[in-house]
Length: 232
Ligand code: HEC
Image 1 (spheres, helix red, strand yellow):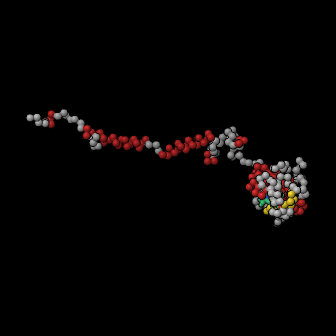
Image 2 (cartoon, rainbow, N blue to C red):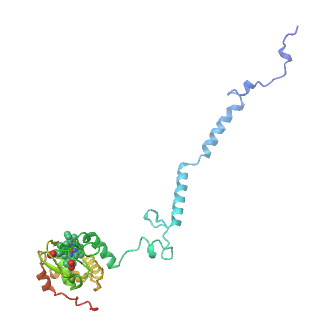
Image 3 (cartoon, helix red, strand yellow):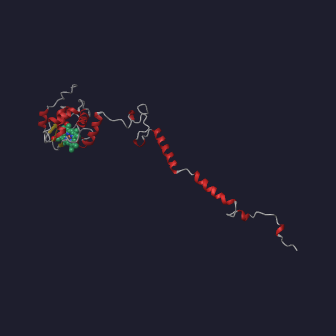
């Protein structure tokens, strides 16, 4: 009679089913340890973005890119040239011809055209015009107060349109830059205009209420070079 005697069994065979029981002693701590280490090793989000930003700023300094216009990595006069001809984005334009050209293209070119030729019979030319090349006082006067009526410019007749005055549109400096641009472009080689010449003309012709006609302009000065133009 072979009866199964529990006493004769091997002391304790580990039951594979039992080993993976969640409440088995070995498994109580393991999951907690795993959870803690997972939390501590995660890279904080702010640190991630800080690194990214630092890389961006460092990279932009090598490419010469002016980060957000802050000039943080401006290397001064000894640094590499950032623009054509060595002029960086911070260089202030002081050339009166360049400044005057901007004013002309923004305010005058729609009628007189960028090439200064205007339109036959309607808008008189700038290149070779006796009003541009002559007396600066007369040029300032007609620009400040405008012109209307028949006028002859470079042999052509005009008068079908009117030019309003620009007195309140520009400062003395801007008007001087504009006049200098007119006098030195499209083949013109007259001398430059100064802000004090414009302010003197403003004061002298302040009482002029309407636009000039040709006869009034010829009374201010006849055609011919400005007295200050010593090259002529
Ligand atoms: C709306 C069109 C118009 C605009 C804009 C205009 N002008 Fe004129 N300008 C004229 C007309 C038209 C005449 C001639 C008026 C006449 O026939 O009596 C004239 C005449 C002149 C003259 C004298 C004649 C000559 O050719 O030398 C000068 C100088 C002149 N303009 C400069 C300028 C300047 C500088 C600007 C910009 C600040 C300007 N004009 C903007 C229409 C314009």
